[in-house]
Image (cartoon, rainbow, N blue to C red; front, side, top):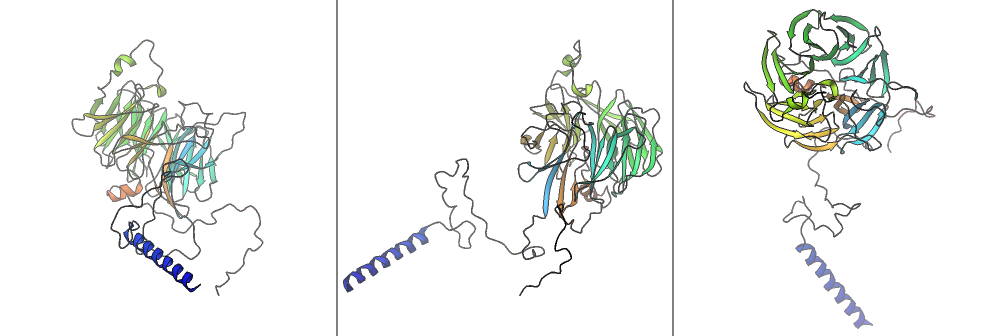
Length: 467
C-alpha cells in the first residue's frame, strides 16, 4: 500500500511540473503586465457564423472621470440617427411606413424604435415630412410636414406641441444659435415664420415679396441671418431679429439645395437644369462661380426629347461642404453619383462616388467623418466608400432627405447635425471655429427613463441604507 501511494505522489508531482512548464511557455494574455507575445490562437470554428473571433478584454486602466455609482449598469451615452418617414416626395411612402425611425449609430445602425409624432388613419396617406431639426437647449426635436409642425420631447418621445399656424405651413425648419427660437418656411408661400422653440408660439413673420414658393431655409452660424430660398430664382436674406430683408441674390435658374461656408460669406446652390453648383457672395449678392460637372455627358441626356423623368425635376438636388472647407460634394440624379470638387478659386472634380440609388440630399454627421445620403447609404468621407445602410425594423432600406445624427447623455441631447451641408457643421463645431455662440445643453439626467405602466405601490419610499 505504501508503495502504491508513493507511486501516485510521483505521478502528481510530474504532472504539476509539466503544467507549470506549459503555462510559462504559453503566450501571455494580450494586455497583461508581462505580455511578451501575440494574441491567443483562435479555435478552428472562430469564423463560423454564430461563433465569431475570440477577443480578450483589455486590462482595465486607471479610473477616469467620476466613479460610477454602485449598482449603476445604465448605458448613459447614446449615438443615434433619427430618420423621418415619409422623407421624400420622390420615393413611394408606403414600403417603410411613417414616423421617426431611431437607429443605433454605434451598433451598425441597428433598429432601436419607431416614434409617431402624428397618428394617421390607415385609410389616409401620411403627409410628406418636409424638414427636421433639434435643439440641445430645449431637448426637443422639431418636425415639419406640409400642413403642420410639431415638437417632440427627446427624453420621453412625447409630443410637446403641434401647430398648423395659418394653415399654410410648413417647410424646412432651423434652430437659432441659442436654441430658443425657430425659423421655418411656409408651404410654398412668400414668407417664413419665427417661433418660440419651447412653446411653438408665433413671434414674427419674415416677408419676402418676389420669392413665392418658400422652400429651403438656412441660418448663419451666429443665427443672425436667415437665407430664404424659394423654388424660384430670387434668394433673399433676412435679419432674424428684425425680420427685414438685408440682401437679395438673383440666380439664372430656380434655387434648389443650398449650403454655407464657415462664416456664411458665400452660399453654394444647386440650380434647375444644371448639373453642378453656383457660388454667390452673400454680402454683395454677386455670383462668383459657376461650376459644371464635365466628367459625364449630362447635357445630352438632360436635353433629350422627351426629357427624362428625374426626381425633383433637376439634374442635381444635393450639395454639401466638408467640415474642413476643402471639398464640395454634389449629387447627380442622372448617373447615380456624387461628384467631389476642390473648393478653390478654380474648382476641379477630384473624385466621384457611384451610389446604388439616386441621391437627393447629402448630410454630414456631427464629426464630419461620415456622410448620410438620402439613398440610405452611409459613406466614409476619407475612403469615399459606402460603410453602412439605414434600414427599418423590417430590414427594408430607408430613403429620406430629412434625418439627423445626434448624441445623448442620460436622455439629454448633446450634439446634433445640421440638415444642411454647411462648412461650420453643428453647434459645437461652429463654436470651436469661432463663428457661432455657445449652445446651452441640459445637464440634469432625464428620468424616469421608462414610461410608467401603472401606479407604483411603493411611491415615496425612503432609500434603505446598506448594512
